[in-house]
Image 1: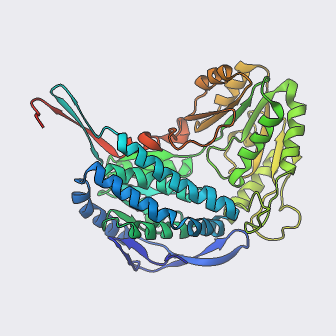
Image 2: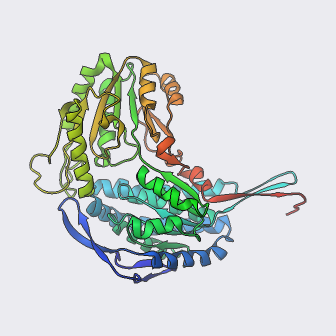
Image 3: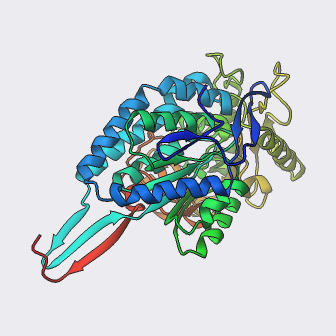
Length: 476
């Protein structure tokens, strides 16, 4: 078990300022399997001071030196893939195979992509007598969630390293073990002391302190829109840069010419993947009114084919949701859907048959959902799909854009040009056409209340760089 009762500061494990331990709960058993220490402002101060000291030298390293460091981090990371996956399976309930291959594997993919990006990135360019310099922005504060732990840690840490920034990370206290293993990875890779610092803790004790800290230059936050607003307000007094990847209520438009069985099956699987705990999940399925009955039948069949169960059972496609609070919220939202008049096609409240404990959710699909219903407007963050109908393409686009969010959108069509034309009219940060594979080079981030800024590849790297113009005679 990784060290979750100490913090990684200035290149070494160190005791908290005022030790306070809480249990880490396995959502499959509802029992504690580890403890994590919660930090405070003094712990953050120590970590920020270490990062500030390290920035003086690390910011002066060359891109080549930083790429070499990323290569070492990747090697150390890949050596711990199984450990990372097993930790996430225990702390957030992901099926073990999915946790190792996807939850842990995605971190390696981000490292590969960042290395590739940094090798071709123009950190400096000359335009006549004008020289453009892209320099490290400073000390970064990271606040990351429990639903895709390694994805959100590595897609921040890797570009920060590539840029020459130093950092302080606060992972979710609900899924802290993977972050402690990641700190061990950074140490094994030879990351210089102070460049990467880990302080475990909750939002009030650590997250808010990071957001407001005067010696942190930028904050990258992933989480709920409500918490993102709070972070931005706390950061405003020091005019620090804030990037936010927040909530979503993504629409998946199936156009009438799509391959219906394929499109609907993939729609259900994408919505329910990771037990529905993805901010970009396609939770609103928009279908032609004339095709509703056929879509509903296909969707129910796809949901019925999904096995929910013990994360250690290879037959389990979905594990539990990650914590009791989330379990209770999803149960309430399902009740709201029924109360507001949506048709419950499959699923509902309570655990799946045969599961007496654990935060397991019955895969649930609602039909004949209208755009004004709560389940069509609010993020549920569980395996719950809402099917809405549209009259024509214009109506579909209008319904898809009728949301405060704008993280992702999905379009299915037999005509790629038609799908592309619809994609251009959707107000969201990433649009997926006809079920493509995940792409770590595509920009990730949202419109509206889904946040600001972008992550992944050169788009994420740019967030950690300041732009300096040197004007006049500059012969170097």
